Image 1 (cartoon, rainbow, N blue to C red):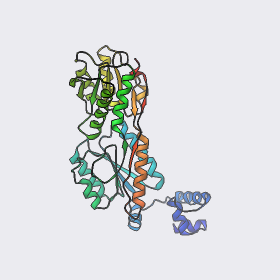
Image 2: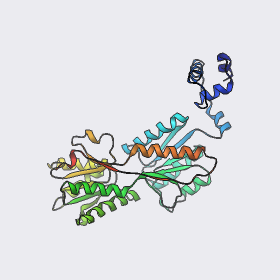
Image 3: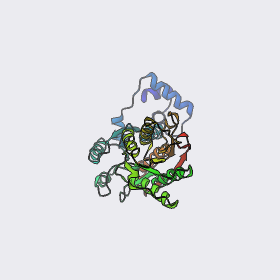
Image 4: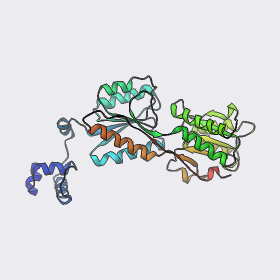
Amino acid sequence: MQDIARDLNVSVVTVSKALRHQGSISVATRNRVLQRAKELNYQMNWVARSLVTRRTYTIGLLLPDFRHPFFAEIAKAVAETVRPRGYHVIISYFEEDPELEATEAESLVARQVDGLIVASAQSPDSDLFRRIRARKVPFVLIDRPIAGSGASFVGTDNEAIGRLATEHLIKQGCQRIAHLRGPEIGIAVARMTGYRKALAKHKLSMPAEYIVDAKYDDGMGYRGMQRLLGRNPLPDGVFCYNDPVAIGAMKAILEAGLNVGPDIAVIGAGNVHYSDVLAVPLTTVDQGTVPIGTQASEILMQQISSKRALRPKTILITPKVVIRKSTAR
């Protein structure tokens, strides 16, 4: 920094501000500093910086699954939000295993991340987040709320997802609506609750065998739909826990020689980025993937920079139905 300051006839403080992208200095001066730093092959010593600032300028992002496009899009939104502030994201995953989640979370905390964003599989009586809070590491929960955690949460109204999806199928004329339900976590229960409430509102009663476990991926959606295809009478509409499950369901329907839409309407949840380019474009409930990642990051940045504990926030993104061909009757 002293070399750059001498070469450009500016103060070391100005150089420091320019390299950290902070402070009120002109764009021209900042660009001159950055260009000279590049010429000198300057690389910031992050270890030295963390010793001075007591920050590592890293945050941990702990997700259940790397493969799911929903979580991939959240990760992208998180990185794009924190990157301009000099932060980097360390991503880990735990395959829906609460014990592995706890191990990964402890590992991230041991690496001195400045904060955590977590889509958790922990039960409400777990002490994981109590231990993290005792280490004074800020964290924000996404997608999956945990009762009694006392943490900020950003997600979607999952009961509304189930209600909106089911009511859309009813409006399309479906009378025998099945549900491929998700894993044994709270958001799957909430989506099924919305499904049942929508049916009750419209005085529709479905047999118990119309609700089939499908977990969260396309393989389970395919097998779950095969089970539904053995029901008599066949369902004429299916609300799927998420888009991958819906994609598996559509594959099973097509393989059975039936038409997705006219014979069996299918709706998912998530609005993943490829839903509109499938052989049969998928109707889905958009749950605000990018806003979830962005707003969770904003809350975490506020917590990290604050000198006092901030009151937890709960932000629920309003879901909306995105209509495509898979529910065209």
